[in-house]
Length: 271
Image (cartoon, rainbow, N blue to C red):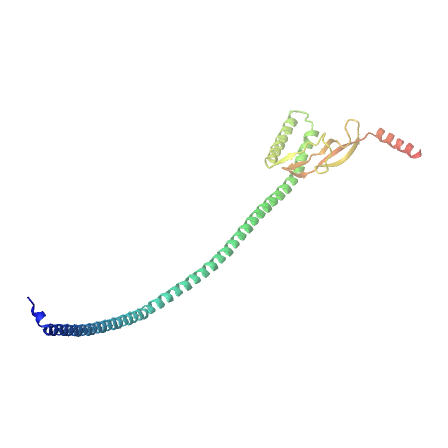
């Protein structure tokens, strides 16, 4: 049994052609649709890009406006802060000048204090020297007055001593008189001792011109040459000061020894 297709080959060709045309039409439609979609997509993309560009531009403008506002605020802040900084700097400068002035005053006061202290030290030293000098002069003056007064009284002491050695009481009445004035003598000597007067005892000592005054030289074998044999007038000391030199007799070599020495010298010269 034959199919319709076999019986009608032309019909099959027409159907193929029709199918091909439909395919072509569908392809063209698809292409058209694709191109339309592409154009639509491109339009959408361009629209999106334009919107993005607008947004970027708007954001850039906004950023610029923000920067401008920030800069303006900063400038305003600087403008507002500048007077405070200048005032602070002026105050600091004023304080520094005041500190420098106070330091200068301190240096001046310190220097004046040193000068005053130096003057005080010099015045203190001068006063101490004056006080020591005055004390020394006072002591020297007192010593001079004391020495002069005692020297005026020493002859009285000498007279009492001569009377004691020369007067020989013969009876009780004379002895009473002798004891009376010797009591006065003792009281007088004790008073001199209290003020520092002491009598010299040069017998048996070597002659010293600082304390002794040689009145006689006596040749003798009993004492070495230059030894004080006797005190003729008593000497006195006021503490360590000589009030009066002791008048003494000094031992000298025997005359025989001196003659022998002279004879020996003559013989040696003749030889």
